[in-house]
Amino acid sequence: MSKYVKGMEIETLRKEFSSVKDLVVLGVNKLTCEGNHSLRSSLRKKKINLRMVKNSFARKVFSELGINTGADSNYFTGMTMVAYGASSVSELCRELDGELQTSKNKVLYKETVKVKGAIVDGQSIAFDIALKMPTREEAIAKVAGQILAPAARVAQLITSPGATLAGQIKQIGEKSEESAA
Image 1: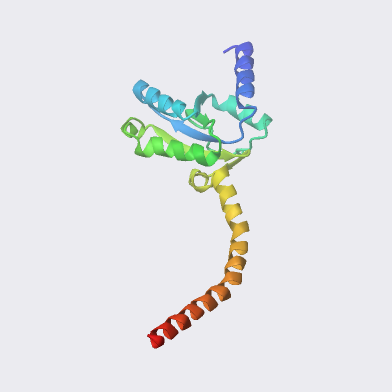
Image 2: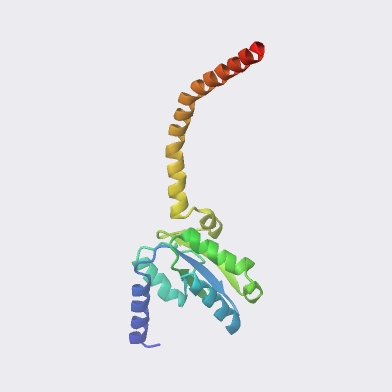
């Protein structure tokens, strides 16, 4: 490959990954044409992109973009494919895990596609951790619930004595009706 072609390839990777901060790195070995097509088409429907990258180019571009994988990382060894494009790394990991583990075509990539890890906001983390991370919407809902929980508890404490008093008055009223009858 000439220097000019290498430069064009690196520039293409820079443009493609300039706005990407969350991605999953996959190792691919002996993936059949049918398996490749199946994986790409099912993920494309979910707006997830796959890109086969040359390891030396990916290391160079990612380090320039501030994506830290570490010098001794095994992310860029062997044949490497990068998945990106979902709204959050959690959603990306869930969709990839679902496709690789539970889809009807999982037999096609059972031994050929392995997850190497995830990169979140420029830092590498284990895929299992990224899989358990909440999506943006889930995180907002959790925070809102935690903010509203004390207010709901205070409202419950305020109305609780009134409800207890109303229940006791009702009981006394029912007893007096029974004794009058």
